[in-house]
Image 1 (cartoon, rainbow, N blue to C red):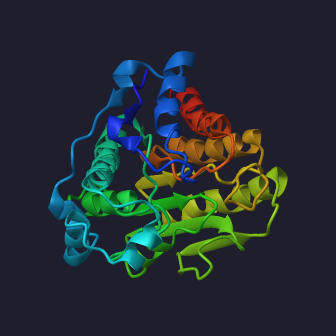
Image 2 (cartoon, rainbow, N blue to C red):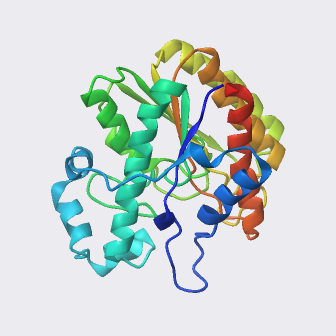
Length: 302
C-alpha cells in the first residue's frame, strides 16, 4: 500500500484581517477532515522547512525576492497581491514552496504527493498577484529539471483562473508543457499564452467540462509524453464559488480529479498536486471539494 505524503504546516493558516475574502480556514479544516474520516493518517503529513533561497531565484528575479524579504514592494505592487505583507507571510510562502518541492521527491517514490496549500500560479518572474507571491509548482519544476529528476514536465492547471504566471515563466521552455482550462470571462482579464489554453464559457456544467477534458487530456499525455506531472486542482470551478464563473457540481469536480490522477497512474507518471483556489461562501463546501481530490487519490493509489 502506497503512503501518500502530504505537505502541511501550521503557518499555512495565516491570520488575515477580519472579513478578508481569502478562506485561510480551509488550511486547518482540510487536514482535520481527512484525518477524521480516515482518508489520511497522521504519519502521511510532513511539515516542510523554508526553501533554499537559490531555488527561488532560479525561477523569480533576485530583486523581486529581495523586495519580498525586505517588505519593500510599492503599495501598488502589494495591493496587486491582495494580502497584507509581513515577514510571517513571506516565511509562509517559502515553506509552501518547499512543501511542493519535497512533494516531488515523494511522488518519484510513491507515484503521487500533495501539498495542502500551493498552486500559486499567478506569481510571475518579477511580481506577484491575486494571492500568489511565489510560484510553487514552477519553482519545483525548475528544480526537477536542473537536477535531472524529470526531462519532460506537464503542468495540468484546472483552477478556474488561467495560470498566467506559470504560462509566462515557461513560455520558451520546451521541457515544460503548460495546460490551462479556465473561465473565459474570469480573471486574469488579459491572459498569457500557455502551450494549450482552453477557455470555457460562463456556467459551463459537468457534462460539457468532462467531455472536453476527456477529449483533450489523454491526447496530451500521449503526444507530449511527460515523465512528471504537476496538477493544480483548484475547486473554484464549483457553481457555488463566488470568484469563479463555471457551474461544476461537487461530483463533477471529483470526476475531473479522477480523470487526471487516473491518467497519471495508468501511465506510471509521478504527479505532485497543489490545491489552488476555492472561494465558495461556505468554507465547508471548499473543504469537501478539496477532500474529494484526496479521496480519489486514496482509491486510485491504494
